[in-house]
Structures are given as structure tokens and as C-alpha cells.
Image (cartoon, rainbow, N blue to C red; front, side, top):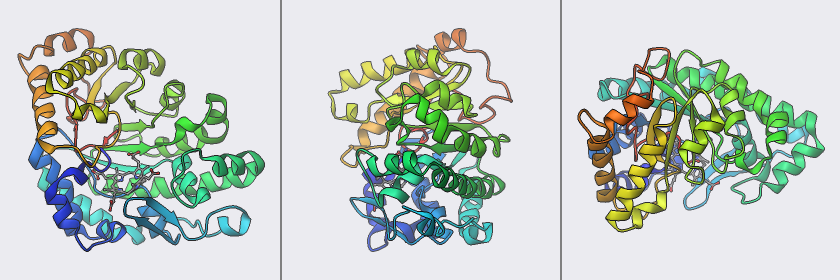
Length: 358
Ligand code: 1CP
């Protein structure tokens, strides 16, 4: 989960004095930060510590990740001339990323590592807006008024994402996640016309590993996001997983505990966790996770308790293990599988990214 590490004191200590974008390029730091939540919580998978704009910066776009803000672009993309700054990524420009992944895979042993990239639309939203945006108004204005340039921009970003994911897979990542965090800003028609083909071209290029496709506010897009070529669709907390399962079709789901639920009394948290697990059993497979990133104020002890609860409920002899088995077909190697990523439980309340999908 994005920023899982941010709630950990050991993360804050390690990051002191190092800018985010620099931290992402130092293999020793990347390895240690990725390992921290896995060690502390015992999650079933790890999410690579990096950021979606890292490969874009590596390819030559002048940008920074500003603390408390997010990615900020020096010269936003608004026309043909500014589009030209988006060049293909040469794998040699991210040798350090391959090194970080290789070292991590060795350290993690049986725990799978989820690599990731930003999806073309979400990356484009930062490049066009110049930074984070609530409405994505400038992005959508560009999309509607310059469709040719828009498709060229998304094509170039898809190319960067393909190269970046391939570097991570070749270095040993077990699964990949494509983060289209802001796709929920689009109607389904616009998503299909302006975005889906580009995300599909990224996902098609990495079909040798399980692929997770995640966005927020995407209740209306779950089917289209699955069709883009995902094995797992990440769902935020707005859509109950049993509803999401009907919409997304023949895919596994990842999610979707509301990240603010961690601030509730334990009885409420437990009820919500059980609800996510029971509803998730309606899907072909389920990776338990938060619906979006861990909030920085989160108490790590609560995340620990949640991970333990999910393991107890879904593990061998667990209260919800049998029910899950009845509903779900056995995990096969062509599915998420093989890795713990596929099996239901906890890829990571905290670690993953789920990032995993989350
Ligand atoms: O110094 C700091 O405060 C840095 C904060 C931070 C961190 C820890 C940012 C800036 N990115 C990250 C790491 C990160 N980003 C991970 C690694 C996982 C982990 O830390 O455990 C991942 C997977 C991401 C991916 C990412 N970056 C996404 C997609 C996932 C999601 O949660 O939606 C997005 C949208 C970003 C952009 C970004 N980077 C950072 C911030 C604060 C943001 C969001 C800005 C916005 O609201 O638009």
C-alpha cells in the first residue's frame, strides 16, 4: 500500500535528510524500507518502495517529489513542444532499480515482491496538471481538446511503464501492480476511449506474471479495468467486494478496508475486517488489503492486529477459511497464484501496495 512505510518510526528515521526521489534511487535504502513493514507486520507480500514518477524522472523529465505535496513537474505538458520532454526509458537508466529488486527478492525468500508502475492516465494527470489535482480539470481539458497529442502522450507513458515493469520482472518481481489511482475521475465512455487501450498495452506486455490493476473511485469502471487485462482488480473502500465481483467478472479482487477504519474502536475494526473477508469470498480470489494507502497517522500496532486477525480468520482451521474454500476455486498456477499474492489473505494490509492495490 502506498506510503505504508510512512506510519513507521523506523521509516521516518531512515528517510531523515534524504529527499524522496533520491531515496528511491539508493538500493540500500530501498531494500531496507521495503523490508520494514514485512518484518513488522508479517504480511504475505511486499510492495516495492519507489514512486510512480521515478521512471518518468529517470527518462529525463524534470520533476520533484515534494514532501507533503507529491510529484511536481517543472514544465507541465500542454502542447507538442512540452510533450517532447517525455522520452523513452532506457533500461540502463534504471539499473539501480533492478539491483534493488534483485537484492530484495533474495532477502524476502518465499515472500513475493510486487513491482509496480503508474498507469498512463495517472502519470499524465501529474504531467499535465504540473502536480496533484483534485478535479483533473486541466488534464481532461487537454484530453478533449488535443486528442492526438493526448494519445501520443499516453502512448509514450505506456512505453515507459512497460520498460519499467520489465526491468522489475527480469530482476525477480513475482507480480506487478499498475496504479491508475485517478482513473475514477473519468466516465466509463471516456475511460474506454482515452485511456483503456494504453493501460491494456502495458498489461499485455507483462502477462507472464500476475497483474493487479488498481484505481480509486472506480466503482463504475471495474469491468473496463478488468478487461484491460488484469488478473486482479484493486477496489477502494467505496464499493463492497461482492458488488465489485459482479462488476469485474472473472478476476480476483484486492482490497478494500477503508484506511480510516484503523481509527475506530477495535470492535468496529474487527467487524469491518470480517465484512471485507466475507464479501471478498464472492470473487474468484481475494487479496486482503486496505482500499487505499495507509494514512500517516495510523498506529502501527493497529495494523499488526489487523494482519494477525486476517491470518487467524483465513489460515488453516480459521473461522473463514472453509467458507472461502467453498466459494473459491482452488488456486491454480495460471492464476495469481503460485505466490501468496494469489491466495486470499493478506498481501499486506500495510505493506502492499497493494499496494498493492491498493
Ligand atoms: O517524503 C514523503 O512524504 C514521501 C511520501 C511518498 C511515499 C512514501 C510519496 C509521495 N510516494 C511514496 C511511496 C510510494 N508511492 C509507493 C511505495 C509503497 C510504500 O511506501 O509503502 C507507491 C506504491 C507509490 C505509488 C504512488 N505514488 C501512487 C499510486 C498509488 C496510490 O496510493 O494511489 C500515486 C498516486 C503516487 C503519487 C504520489 N507520490 C507521493 C504522494 C504524496 C503522491 C500522491 C499525491 C496526490 O495526492 O496526487
